[in-house]
Length: 400
Image 1 (cartoon, rainbow, N blue to C red):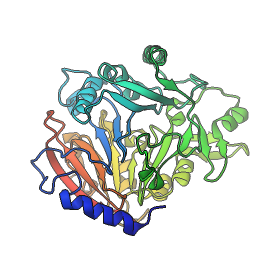
Image 2 (image 1 turned 135 degrees about the vertical axis):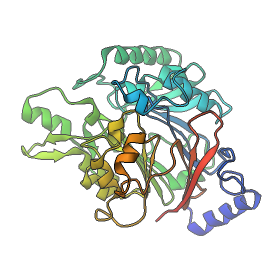
Image 3 (image 1 turned 30 degrees about the vertical axis):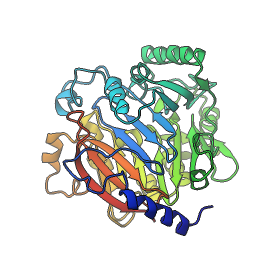
Image 4 (image 1 turned 180 degrees about the vertical axis):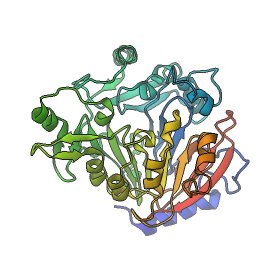
């Protein structure tokens, strides 16, 4: 394990040639500074029609985690939350163009699908028009479609066809191993320098949860055995991972939510169980877009993040219930920031004077840049109204 002193000395050397992000003067109004070796970048890309995360690990390993597109939204949704930058392109096309501005190569090391809903998968083929994916994980392989419920058949079949074709062209596909550490790893860290302080832990998938030690619990299997019901809502089957880089930790778990019936016949609050094995994290992607019945008090307390990232394509994804939990100083103390891609104007008016929006970051793409060694990180908010990569907000955090 590399000591803090060594990492600080190397970080100081980097600072001598430029601050984190390679630009000591990059501030609001300037352009995003880009990635540099040693940094961990988490790009939470806002399109208003999907959830999309693109990551660049400290050695340059790249990963796309979900990329979707919602073709049809309920009346009023598009007016309250218009597509960004516009509706002229599909969500996946905007994501592809965003990634093209980040990296010069046309290969992405990892593609991971948290679950089979359109807002998480329907844009993948759009990104594949410019990029070749080398490794693929989903939450169910090789039992694809197990417990299938509330999955659009057309979107599901289209993505499965694309996966088969990509595998035929050389993309490697393997099961997502719950509990594994290092299945997703640094692929370009030849000297193992960053690997000593970087890890990705697979926490949950398809209703199976790591027990925090050397085994897993098949909660979905217990539920089926107890109830006799083979169908489980797709959201609760989402894959979850925890990324750790030095003192920095990040949780992302797709649309995890809901309850199961355990082996003893008692209810299992699944989201809270996943939060328990995740533990405290610095940054947390909200479960199920912070929709009602997700981000329960137990999960929020157990993860106690300083920063929440939440994609929005439905007005109901900004609501009293989850905002009250995420902003509660009774669940855990300290300042925190909530980065929504967009907050409907009528919600801002409704919440005015109630304190629920006091912790809200500016709207746009949320980019978390973790400094070499993982001792501190910066939230950049980039304009989603155009493709300028212009910084509209910044905030620094110290890991603890």
